Length: 376
Image 1 (tube, rainbow, N blue to C red):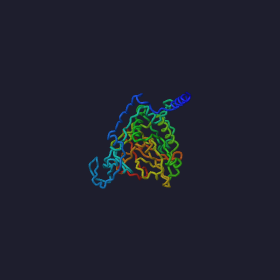
Image 2: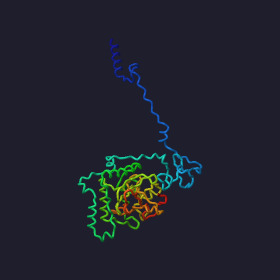
Image 3: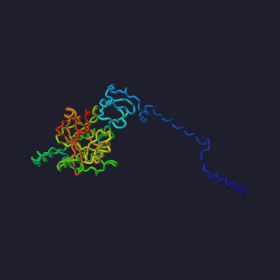
Image 4: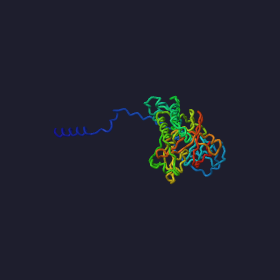
């Protein structure tokens, strides 16, 4: 009996210590089969598939898809996805210079739809700070301007023209609409809003932006104009923006219109973007780069690149300074100043601007190097 008892105990220990890996057959119903996978359509696959650039042996038969002409082959752009041709002036908006690298037509680029923004989204987008003071103290009024003019001597008025702060629209709903158009345009181009020059790793450091490097020197912004600049920056932080709206034109692309009267010598905006050395951007196809510093040593020259970050200055268009009609449209000027030893670029009204009038300035300023003969 003892051996039998011993073997039964060992059997019980073996069964108790064994880990069951699967259920006995018949104890559970079979698990349901997984739902069938939803397959993508061919159109969805082609819309997201990577494209390959295949060079043809002969492009003599390429014509423009818009006008149907094969003339002016030096102005024909070929889409790297569909391989169709387009004249630079037939595109909407017009392409003013030959792009560097790959280029996609409007149908293949998948441009993002322009978004609309609610009031809450606009406040968050621009990081607007709520004003805690009394409204009359926060805003800029005509009485303030008159008081400042009385304090200034008439002799000084004749010697130098002073910058005027912009006067925001009185209606808060109108200001929200203005900022909403800017937010929509920035989002459509996948840009971040910024009201300060940015110095990113791998680009020019802030220490490189020194006005003393300017070839021939740079004019210094006066104390009074510096106060005007700071006043405009403070208003923008409170959501009191310049009376401007960004609109889309089928020919010019995004452009800026006055949403209220703007006086001559009014500060419009500072030109904002990433600061980089000009030598790093010599082969860049961004059409909105702005000269920041023209150094004696060309390797230290700087440009502002609003291809990642920017503000409303990014959408103010340039004139065609090769035509009389183009020169007539100019109502702003681009000026560079030394502010606390650093180079800054401002856009200033050169005459009274009426509501509904578009803003234009000369990209070249005093350099006369940027080609504008393709501008509208």
